[in-house]
Image (cartoon, rainbow, N blue to C red):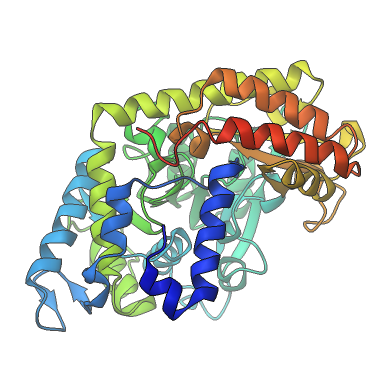
Length: 434
């Protein structure tokens, strides 16, 4: 994994890379937002394209020498539009957070109405939402007047009647859908009806389940949302980065009130660059193009089927062992485990599982009484393990290991024994497998 040149020149960083590779190979990566890229994606991400500055857009650069990187960006955009049945795409955002920032600022100038913050709505962070959907510590919460809708604590699902009621009262200018820890499908059609009723833009952040949308295993927001944002990693299994899409044609004139541009696509392009970013990461954009081509292959649809099957089996096995899952199951690649019924915190459970060779993350659950640094739950996902070739038999083994590890979160000898079993199983699977 590490060249002799790097080992000789910078042994400290060489050791970091080697140790991280070993961690990813010997342990079970079950953080729902993580995955493993293919060798070809990694090759392009580490290529000479990292040397090239290309501020602007293809055929409209501020730098010379962009003939070949223009081809890469055009391929990335074309493949993204084909993959998601979109009419327009911007593949330059460095992350999902910047994709969201670019979208919000393009659609809604936070300083345009007498200095007052303009209302938006998004899913509450403690109920599975994302920082960029309105958290007070994030730019979204600092720039806009955020009103958060929540999950019904009795069902663990979004109550669309409650969302409609809040929207009528608040009159938000943007309604954001999508989440980082919600295990169920999204009703984009109903959200669009609500947005139209109150005169709001509908933004769909599909970062977590983009891979499922791409192969039609999750409802697509493209017919309903004005703008769709996503990351390109997670279930899409590409390099770390962001993207923005829309069913508006490039240059298509739309609703009134558009700040500083006549169309949505023009506004977003101008906010991404030069508004919030400088030079695009051309090595990552080219790697996105490779990942999109991978996702267009039949093998990717089969991969997503296995991700979902693994999640279903793991969820069922955990519930058999008396674990409480938010919403009593999952429709997608992740599950949210409420550990309050077992008298455990997410923090201590995450640490116990880490010692056992299973990497998860602590997570808030609906009605959580613990702080975000402690939490009452953990989030578990199946994308990375499925990429390695693990299947339902391994999911049943993992459910048993999780159960055993959390029976005593302080027993380090117990965790060490499980760790040895995990390593033995994990070494039977390569780092990447179609």
